[in-house]
Amino acid sequence: MTAWTRFRFELRAVGATLLCLGLVFAPSSVAAEDFSPDPFELEEFVKDHHVSSAVAAQRMAAQDRIPELVDYARELLGDHFGGVWVDVARDDQITMGLASGTAETKSAASQAISRAGLDGAVKTVDVRSSEQALAEAVADIARRLPDVNTHAPGDITVGIRTPGNAVRLSLPSDYPLTAGQRQFVNDTADKYGDALIIGQYEGHARDQACTYQTNPFCDPPLRGGITIAIDTPPSGRTCTGAFVARGNATNQLYQLTAGHCRTFDNTNLWWTYFTTGSQHNLGPFETSVINGFGDVGSIKILNSSGWDPRSWVFVTGGPDTTSNHQYRIRDDATPQVGNRICITGAFYGRSDCGDVTETAHCCPGNPPVGALIRANYCSTNGDSGAPTFAVNTAYGIHKGAYSACDTYGSRAQVAEQALDVHITHADD
Image (tube, rainbow, N blue to C red; front, side, top):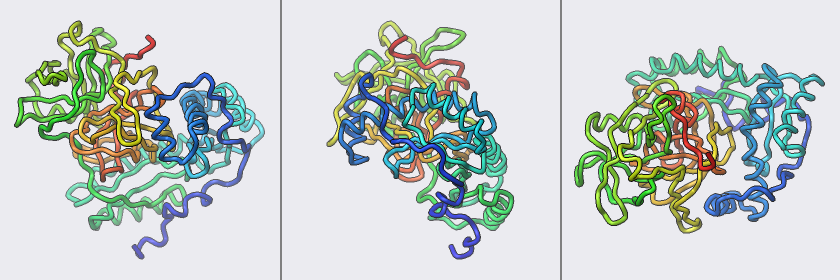
């Protein structure tokens, strides 16, 4: 990699972009009395972050309020908002970037923090680039990537790394860059300078649909996190069912999944098993959207009275976690870098959690898909379409992975817009 030494690499990101500290608060000062985390999520957080259950619950309660914080910050700060992230390496400190250090900007930030109920729990830092500027940079780079990656053995990808206040180009470590890709990296670095980080990833972008295997199924009510299949064993092909949704115009109930699962079959009925081993039809694929904004699809639930669909996800237990067959989805939102995010894929063997590593991620796969969430939860083939979630909030729909625990998926709110549906909530 000696040819790339003039570029800013990820290990040098923090400190090269964050200019100075503003308001500094304790990372876990949010009271958790009114917050009841699911045992599975709490156990995963304790195991991964090496903290007590009490501290984990407090930090999860604070992260639960981040979507509100982002909404208020965008409203009050406008072009001076530099994004929000969770600094996992520093005790999960919630941090907000300010693209202007004026007293007015700091006052607006304090108002946003207070409105979100996070007084004393958010640190502010001055940054060079606003959230909007980074989004525009990603859009510009993503627009050119499909042509750059054509006929290349490995894809260059891009996304926003708010902790470094930068856009990250990820280069494949297992495949050589083409001459065109190398020129693209040079040109992009010249254009964006310190607003660009160069990183690497192992493996190769791949969707994670699968051929038939024997995996967990559920009796009604229908919920997310179950195996769904087309055709019949042993030649059947499978994905994972995500959240239950309702059509905005039709009131029809659907089970969401990945759009690329439709490539298996466009006409026959998708089905799943009951716990008795009997096969039962769900319905046909209704809509599939695979474009620069996501990879999402909907399966029409034909017998809604029989299936009695619920706003639940099947959380499967593991060596360190507790199963929950009725994990309730009470909201949907877009997570930020550092947010906890979990998945129940039908084939990985258990539900798994990690942290969001990149937002606005683009453009793995063919056709290229953008506006994704990149994370470090783990998955395997057959997990395409799986629900991603945390703190009882729907975050997204799993698409694929570069390697076992370098994963990505579409945002839940993008799925709602693209498919003209709304994810049902347990408290509705």
